[in-house]
Image 1 (tube, helix red, strand yellow):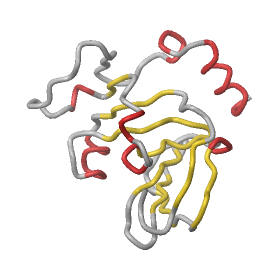
Image 2 (tube, rainbow, N blue to C red):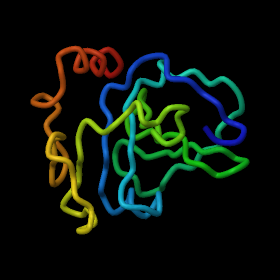
Image 3 (spheres, rainbow, N blue to C red):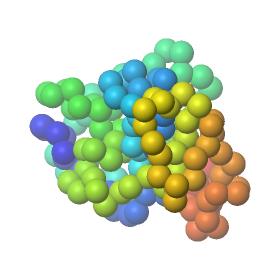
Image 4 (cartoon, rainbow, N blue to C red):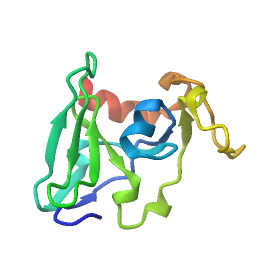
Length: 144
């Protein structure tokens, strides 16, 4: 975790994405970002208050990043109302959350070799085909 903001996930993430899009590369300053998609209600803020920034050109669903106002570490992003994409590297045990899928790999760095046992998509994927019924139900419970 970062400086002043501490939080805990109260449930397993719905899915963990390794996103290789150019926006994620630019924002993180590295080859990809590792995001744990989880319902906001399943994240408990233990201390601190994250600051936020809404990107003005984020599209129809918006894109607001939340970060520690003290150290600047990005903690999570809200792309879809009711859900956060928690930055796995900010968790107490990031190794417990390896990627379930690699997305937007058409823009991945060419020197990065991806493991053969994790699904890879050049862009996004079809949730109906990839997600379990349980995870689809969690999504529906929030968005209706």
